[in-house]
Image 1 (cartoon, rainbow, N blue to C red):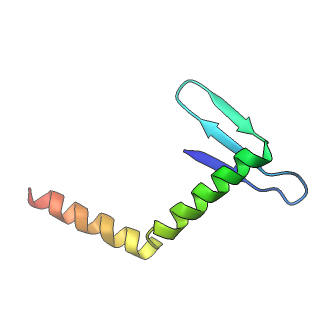
Image 2: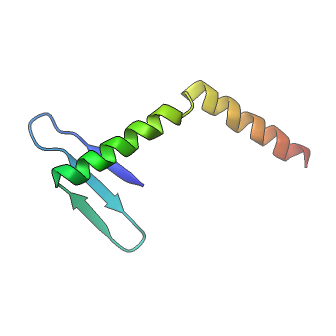
Image 3: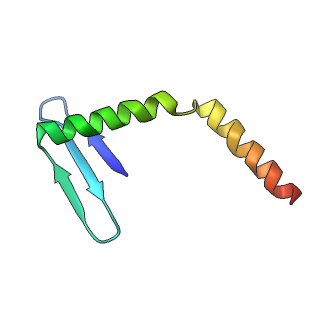
Length: 65
């Protein structure tokens, strides 16, 4: 997971966190990489309503087992 943080008066920052460490990235090329990743994820993400419906459908199927 990553957090892409854009600040109105400062440069953007990417925050990466794992179980044992974390790092802030300020390099413009690295930030652009994560911007592209976020854009691709947004293209395939479900809407909030579709997400809720999907989780509900999975829960119902799980209850039948």
